Length: 116
Image (tube, rainbow, N blue to C red; front, side, top):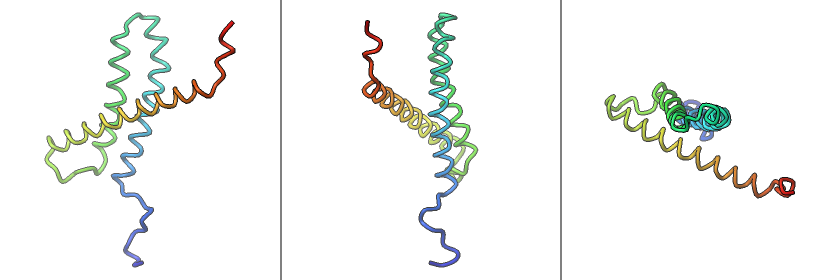
């Protein structure tokens, strides 16, 4: 291996930005769902919480990816569309992951203590 070559386990800045954006989106979805649910019940505005639960994580993910070096060579409109589609895919993946974790938690935890 040359001194100028990077080892294969080193991630590019674009990959790091995608991983950071994915983690931020996952944490944001979980946090907004946990905090937003009691607020929605108190205010009785389900549509507002739905809008916040979807738009806030997507906006955070888009902002992180847009600030990174991801596809800088493209025109601004095309780059924005690509980054928006990647943000939507990351959001969908975060929702699927949280759903899987919820099913696993329900399967593992003993639910008999809730029955009388």
